[in-house]
Every structure is written in C-alpha cells, then in structure tokens.
Length: 133
Image (cartoon, rainbow, N blue to C red; front, side, top):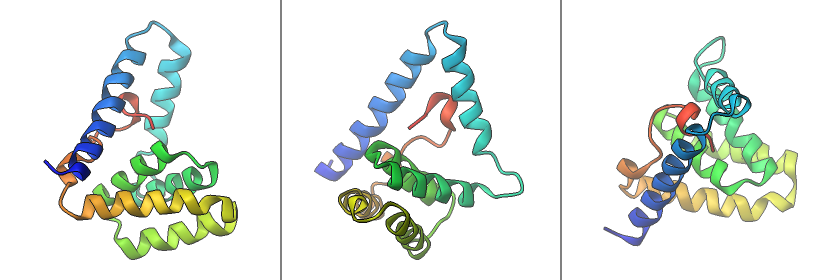
C-alpha cells in the first residue's frame, strides 16, 4: 500500500477506534452530543452534500485538520465534485482569512490522495455517532 493509503487508513482506523472507545463510556452527555451531530447531517431541507459542504467550511474556519479531512471524504461520498469543494474552500478562505491557507493546503492534499485511488480508505460511511470528527 502506498504512503497515501497508509496515511488515510491510519486516520480512519484511529477515528473509528477512539470513537468506539469514547462511546463505550457511560456518559450520556457525550453520547447525546454524538447523536445530535449524527442527526444534524441527515438529509432534510438541505441534502447531505450541502450539509457536508457546510461542515467543511466550518472546519476550515475552525482550522481543524481532522475535521477537514473527514468532511472532504464525506463530501466525496455524497457526490460532491472537486469544483464544488474548491468553491467551498474559497468561502472558508474569505470567512477565515489567510490563517486558513495551511489548512487549505492539507485539505487539497487529502482530496488529491483520495482521488488518486484511495477511496476505499476514506472514513467509514456511517455518521458521527460512531464517527465524529
């Protein structure tokens, strides 16, 4: 497996393992937050792709690289194309300013890695209740 595939797999496996570990604790606040997060990304008036793009922009502005990678992968799973992601990246830059640029670089790098054929290593398709960024 390529270094790109290893990196994507490590990211995915760590998130899944730690989310399972966290949800194994008997803390209702944590469980409810994860459930709320899951429900927020379900299709409603806004479709899943739009909600994932919103999550991507928010993650860029908040400068959370794990969240950015997660939402890039989820956007791809939801059928969002590269051009639409770059429009979302531009909104993140305008809102967040130049401090977002290093995170944009990592987002595009992650997108490139996914597009290079490592899609099977993208974060699992189930929602945040077991897969929160």
